[in-house]
Image 1 (tube, rainbow, N blue to C red):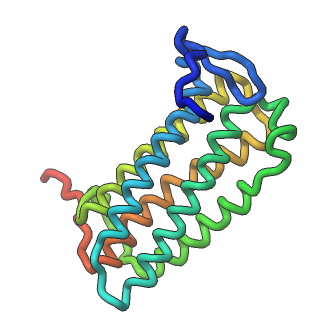
Image 2 (cartoon, rainbow, N blue to C red; image 1 turned 60 degrees about the horizontal axis):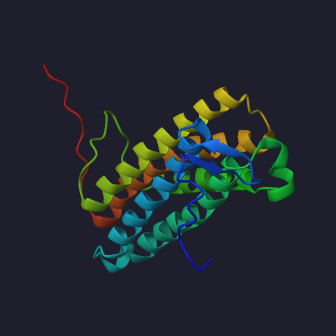
Length: 199
């Protein structure tokens, strides 16, 4: 690629994987566009976590969390690609996707991290440290991405196995980032703040 701009989208349309032209306002673009946004949010969280000074006894745990988030960033490119591909072309372009295995990895890591966390008896407020707050941003963007993916499924009547696995993975992502935000405070040896209902 010699130039970043192609001018082919100047009229408000773009191409899906396979060549089909669609409006830039369609649900499909909203879905994979939000995945792209989430990837950028995760990148900010990774750099924030890398820059966070932690005690030596928590450094390995911080590095593991950074690795998991970097893996998620890579996987989101596959997710975005699947969402940008019409269902009839998925097997042609993607053959098979390890999304089921990736979802299982998220579940395993959440269970592992939760072992270090206190039980929650009320809603956790999204703060405590810059990194934890950023991970809560990732959580909310992940949940919006999931909503947009579901909306895309409704508007396109898409029901293929690739899409089903994307929905499962997206559903686990917001859960993962909730746990990751809490786990970050554990790594930083900082306390959580809980919602206090008005009396």
